[in-house]
Length: 273
Length: 254
Image (cartoon, rainbow over all chains, first blue to last red; front, side, top):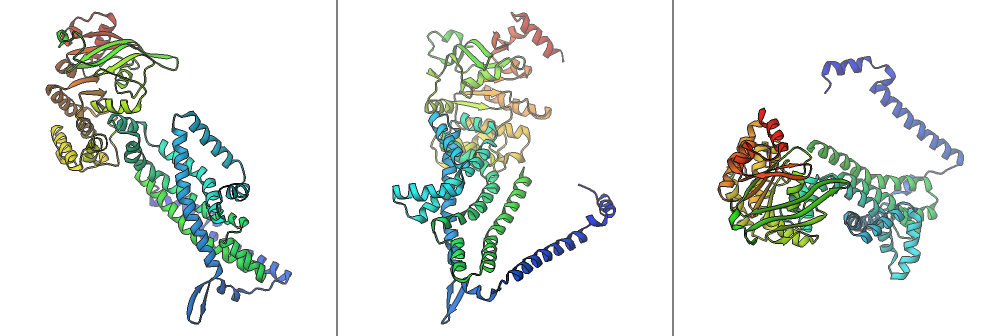
């Protein structure tokens, strides 16, 4: 803790270009400058701004009836994919972690192969492999191909988070649980996971943000998510600036609250320890 | 000491038969032979690194030995996790660092084993846990979390947690070494009470006063070997080995 006087000293001795006021002013000026560049660029291209046409893609009222627009329907698909993938991602991450922490040689090998392949190939290529190879072989439709592809990709990162969480539980806890004669299931469920999960939650929520962002990739296999809907609208209307800005804003409206939530969780974990 | 009863091993609680253990190249336990009978109270002492903690941690297989045989109540310890879990239910253990489960209250720490390992009902387990917390003289702390308790109280909860499994033998691994001086007595009192109740106990400790009052055998370990094993009187007054004498001189002078 810095005491008030020292804090005051620090503020007072700061040169003017390090002060908060200058910070805010320069931030606003920077934003205005960027907006101006975009506007000028668009103007020099002869871009015809048509913001008034955007709201219909968010919602419409026809004959007094409220209808979600294409972008919102796309968002629903995005969230649906994210939700299923998130659940599957945690299952895959947990299984991979258990295989890695087990003493079984083939279990270790399997987990290592999975992790190395997923981490060292592009997500786009993985998605194509799922769509063109695994999908047809097992007769899976494209929505579930998208879910599976994302889950297997993010599962590799979930495995890392879960492993770190489990390994952070002190050795003495395992010993005490073992010495009590608990079986492996009870040790994990009653002793290890209750202590590891609070530590895993912040990075896991961060991973969920990642998952939502990465779900845009499913547009390459023609799943009608938010990004695909955006692309289709642009193909119809040529409003690329307005629609991409809107799509980005919709993603932000989901991911920013989640990111703030991560920050909150992290502060809580820090307070506890 | 019930040495005379030990004719054909029917009364043996724990046996080591030429047990050897290595950590990598380091030979921690060297040809350990040991018989401990039901009701016996053994104190193990020795300089740090002499293998005394490792020895008792082998009894409930927190450590694996590489050579020889360890028998607990006639069962040979091996690699079968199910068999090991069954043996661990009969062998209670108290650790230097308490190792209470921090996310559970004192009472829940005590009921976890009976419920999950012995399949007891919650009500039954709680009744047993309250009785054991009463026995270690902290019934009023039942609903507190470990971090709200003093070191001595935490260690007594840990003892109660072990007792809730109704073990046949209790292992103590330097139970007072992590405690502030004024809390050592309350834990030792609990252990003395336990000894008086006839519990088979194996304690690694440097509390020589406790050893004198409670132990029927004191073992001195050095460099992975049991150098001396004798009744307290002989151990303190006329030990056979010069190494033991030297160790006693060092710790008893102060």
